[in-house]
Length: 173
Image 1 (cartoon, rainbow, N blue to C red):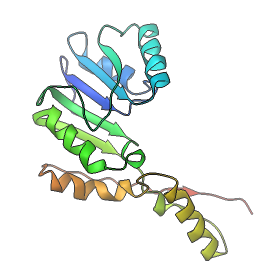
Image 2: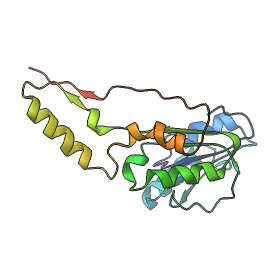
Image 3: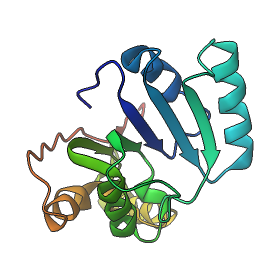
């Protein structure tokens, strides 16, 4: 995210503030971290955690929809999301909104899963494939991870870096 002191940062799909609170250290007292989620209880929990951590003056969590954020264009120095795209029907709209609110030259970071890549050590391949499909279909966009590079290219973003990590489940004999 290339964070610096004084930066304005937003985390879409922040949940209970697991990542927003540590980000406060990177932006310092002059910076601001905003966490966004659609789950009201997560927002309440995240704000409570920020207060307990002593960073509530620069870390705030809001109940917003990631497709339509009440934020100025070109405002944030860095925008991030982790495992949000798999839960939305239109990841391209979320990314478009991320681009809109991020300053030119700012950084957009996204991490998400492609549940169809799940590999299970199973002697019956057909069962593995059906389990993979069942798991993938539980999400609104279970293939989100594989779509990120294409979505970023469609937004004409530069310096796109893709890192792939395997998704597997080990079974015992």
